[in-house]
Image 1 (tube, rainbow over the protein chains, first blue to last red):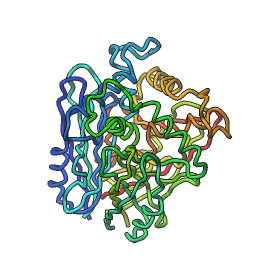
Image 2: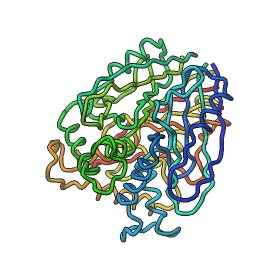
Image 3: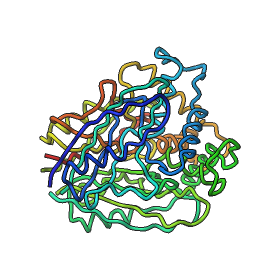
Length: 139
Length: 139
Length: 139
């Protein structure tokens, strides 16, 4: 049995999803763990994680558009607006998706389904450097 | 210390929730692990997980109805509609709930509260065979 | 390698968020684990978890208000209303946020970002005693 953890940075280009499956898989490989659990964690409150369809980019664009409409930037009653109109919507969209995702590991690989990819979901308008931590425990 | 992982399939009958607590508990028992963490993972992007009230079925029906209204099937601006009007709403409802759920294990059992059950939440209209992976690490 | 688990109770004062980062950190310290994964789990279906901004309380108030509007207490079609108008909204707000959160541990500490805190999100109007379980696996 062993435990392993690694960090990496993802440079986003403003609002939208960036696939990070390969980066997470690399941490599993480096850990040398065949069987166990991997945990992916975003160290921010205005970006989040979603395990989403990795085939049709339209599916991700529709998802992004849905969140833009569910939590509009021009909501008049937001108080926490110091960093701009995309500040508070970013926190809410993060709270509605995920900060951590845990995925079983078998045969040294994530047990993702055929159409699943791990995506970092950036909720701020401007590009950001987002830190991701991955821990793996198992044998 | 040890690690264990198992898969099982849940046959859904269209949109709605199916309790899978017993199937997850079985994996814990087979693992022989008394103390640690169990992770439940759905290998799909149009079905998800919720730890929900296991007593009154009305609570689950109200939850399902809420998601039907929050993400309507007849949303006119969805682009990703190749598989039908329930395709894109299924991905969004998945993103708003969970793909993985991690639960501490003590005395060889999930530490669920009295009224908590683990439910697979099917978001497509037609029946599907959904694959669930459970990993357990501990001693 | 070792595994550790502990429970604690949080007394809430009705709807709103209570930071529990320190309580979770204490469990990590008591576990003696330096490197691995911590899992936080709420044993209830009308309270949930969010890793949220720990600086400006306005951000948390805006988030709470958003959920109050997204899932209104006076929704006329709710059937599961035995415990009052805040009963069903509580379950839905829980389903939209998280029951479990997993966080990598490095150097004996949670790898939270600078502005992240772990919050218990109470969804019922009246004060409640909420049980939290934390498990840690690693070395």
